[in-house]
Length: 347
Ligand SMILES: NC(=O)c1ccc[n+]([C@@H]2O[C@H](COP(=O)([O-])OP(=O)(O)OC[C@H]3O[C@@H](n4cnc5c(N)ncnc54)[C@H](O)[C@@H]3O)[C@@H](O)[C@H]2O)c1
Image 1: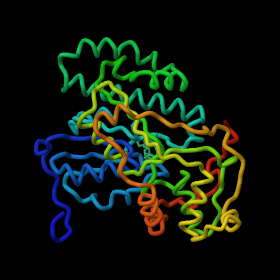
Image 2: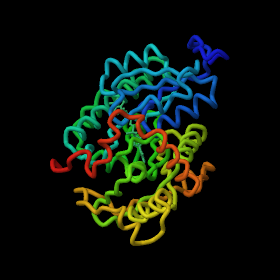
Image 3: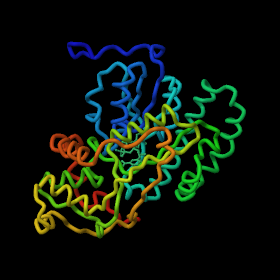
């Protein structure tokens, strides 16, 4: 941006050391990743591809939207022609893939499960074509062989097969011989998250003088990582990660949903009286699927030098402050505050 606040013209493609495609960049985690990359890597061109679903907000990117090393493109990763064209025209070197349906209840719908699977596959097909054209000519034969056969096999896999496959090994590397790194992280919290997820939802409910709606007993526990810590983890994997590897990005910090609600009530309603706190809690039916806990081991990424740094007290204060000012960044934010914004009856 110039001193007058005018956007500067794009630099020619050759003026950037790398061209990075970030999918789902108007969503929660990827928007933090983009802000960090655009600010800290001015010699990298960062291209944000997002279809702008209900949970997306371009306000998440306001601080960098006029920078010359940033570009937003609205589009759907399920549209393979469009994705192919994008790879051809934008000369992508690195892909950071975040776009997904992240609402757990929506994800359980069969049509979403299929869409998720086929979108991932179409996307990888396009990535592979780009790879065939420009990146690794020596791997052409191997990739041609793998692209002909396993795609159809992978298309027919169910969600469970995919889960088993990706829990055990990185299928894109083992099947496609494609240099993909997979990461899996604990629950992430911080600014920019659509308030359908538990932390921004409870914060926003309390800030609107409404009760925290607890699904089931509230005894389910979650591990929470602050957004900038997870961005640091992705940067670490980008710099030091091994192609074909899977890295868990976890934290030992764990609390139950009920504990979380009480902590937020203390901070926002400034009370620690048990009876007053109970007044801000509403127990509703549990979701059809609700894991009790999912801690993970993260030795592999610790070996690369990454550890979470932001203490819970600091991260949660920043998050509460952010939602005070920014709740209306999404057109439909009010809807997210219902106990079940998406009715779970179909699962
Ligand atoms: N939030 C967490 O706690 C958490 C934890 C572990 C892993 N993850 C994973 O990280 C990734 C990002 O999660 P998030 O919480 O930031 O998600 P989010 O729901 O905030 O954002 C998803 C973004 O993807 C976009 N999108 C969805 N479908 C698309 C499509 N077909 N084409 C183009 N764009 C599309 C949406 O518009 C949205 O901007 C997901 O893969 C998620 O499973 C998230």
